[in-house]
Image 1 (cartoon, rainbow, N blue to C red):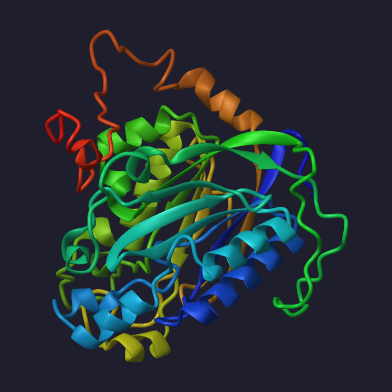
Image 2: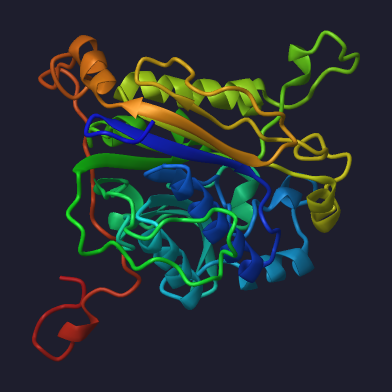
Length: 369
């Protein structure tokens, strides 16, 4: 069914990253963008650190100089020709992209997400507010300002490009002309958070107040917990909240809290990836699998079928935006179902800079004043 003014077809990937290979990662990203657009999707969401793959080795050993150096060199920079290629793919196929990636900014790495419009415009780029546990051995915190909190933006929904899309054609072949001059059929608020940011109540509330209709929840490979299997004879030492169902429940809860469609994007880890990062036998990301992508409706119901955790593919769902209106009629945390006279959220949106006031030296003003 084609997207209508009230219905938008969305795509969520469940695929294996091109581990530690930026060039191949960009090529695969563009191919999936093209495939999703050919199947009628208007928005596609990718997992956490899709480019250049989640650094799974951090859960096996705290330091790996060789992998860390390679990871930094293969991480995505903005701006760069690599990121421009992804923007061009979005524009060529008139599809919005929510991309999870490892961002290299001057040598420091950040868990980042970008929202690219269907005309190729960079609508938002934000960084994970606080990397989780061992992630802090690789990634830094967001520094405040727009890189932290600007994670919900209006996204235009464009009609299909005038030239037909062949999903089986070479992704590097000549693409249809960008749809930048095309008038949007509608505009939809789209938001994004990464992984356990969905366990941050204040951040979730701030995101929900942006009133997203569609939310991209980016996750790494996640697995069923041992306690969920009757066949497991060995106690699972990992947290259930880090498991497949634990992470799904966090995304599902946000769908209910924000009355938004949630695109729960996870990655797949194969034997090839395990060998590349040396994680075999680790209690976290030590075996093949990890895929559990899904789409949840604004009342929390699951809208997509199951895909085996080792299988790569793209899941699709038709999102009727009238369901958002229906859900908000019962529960609107930023409206009728709130008490800002009693409870409210304080936000400091200021950017933290390393140098402040240097340009004012010699002008009779104190630096930093």
